[in-house]
Image (tube, rainbow, N blue to C red):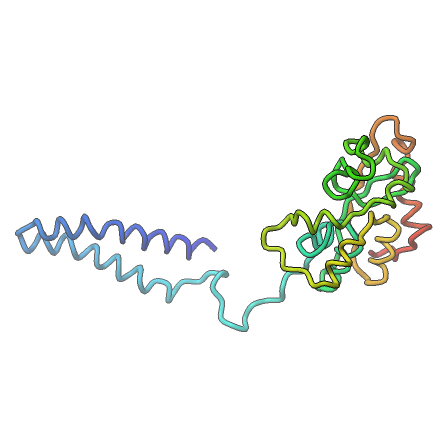
Amino acid sequence: VTAPFLHVIAIFTMVLLAWPVALHFFRVRDKVLQMLILTPYLVVLIYLIFVPLGMYSPCIREKGTLGPKPALIGHRGAPMLAPENTKMSFAKTIDHGAIGLETDVTISYDGVPFLMHDHSLTRTTDIARLYPHLRGEDPAYFTWDILEKLNAGEWFLKNKPFYHTPPFSAEDEELAKSQTIFKLSEFLTLADKANKLVLFDLYRPPRFHPYRNSWITRTLEVLQEESKIKPHL
């Protein structure tokens, strides 16, 4: 794997040595000494020029000999194409052929598991506009009736998280603007319909949260009873 990189370093070193070798070659008057200086340099240089012909590296392959592309799992969906952890983001992931969907799960104060990576709603929702006095609160301290009112897509259009995010079509832009916080049950239903593997980080609720000691049980209830996702997913 490192052979091409070592070869480039060796060539670069020989280029740096070209000037001192030439300087000493022309300063020496003795023909024998000139040959002793120049010959080893030329031998090494010619060797480095032709050595790639016999070099094997998995980085260098003939066209058509590459193996299958690696399977992809959408981390928070496709956050470079849509607002992270939203229905749109996971739909984009499915459209691009990923084998699985990965997300982060938090449990609301009234026991509704939902998708949220941050420990604040400020970055990915409009909490600062609707409830400015609550902008710093942990998402787990909100009830679902408040969470479902928040917009989870407009931030993406204003501050795209990736420099090379492609331009949106008018349809995608309107769709992004309408994104809301995604419930775990809805996420699992989407994955089940598309037959995609599911992975998620489950955050334990903070202190004094009613589900602090039963967050795993509540999540299992959603998995087994509300979503009815296939067990192998």
